Image (spheres, one colour):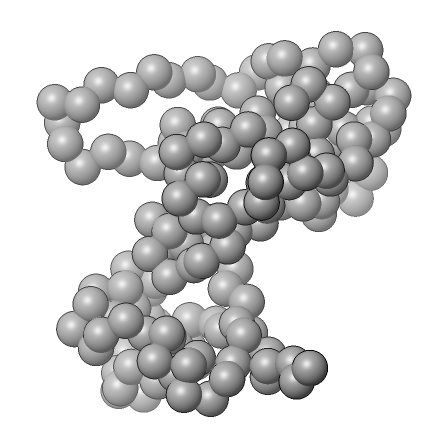
Length: 167
């Protein structure tokens, strides 16, 4: 089996591929790239298909992630806490951190009201993360097991992997 080439896409490279000038490319925002992408077609899909590439896109902007990704891994303090296809992630997220991320995505319709839950607790140090589940210090569902035992990433539904003792 032949493996595809692998490409890590950053903002400057993406802007260059989309034909942004050098001055604009150095200061491009992900929003500008997404806007340009709408005009350029379904980038980077045609490039991926033509060259047989696989790409890794890293972002905190879930709207962009949803727009360009097929499968998504959600990470918290360096650990993958959920992995699935984009439709499942955006409609049936299972990890408590992923749930919180989804609640933070702005809804463009001011008439739509969404439940807001502010995370309690302190953000752990990424240099010295807590024992057990790294998210237990902020998780509204955490139990004692979460504090002492690291959850394994396991398939809880076909194609959906979650690292949580409670899911």
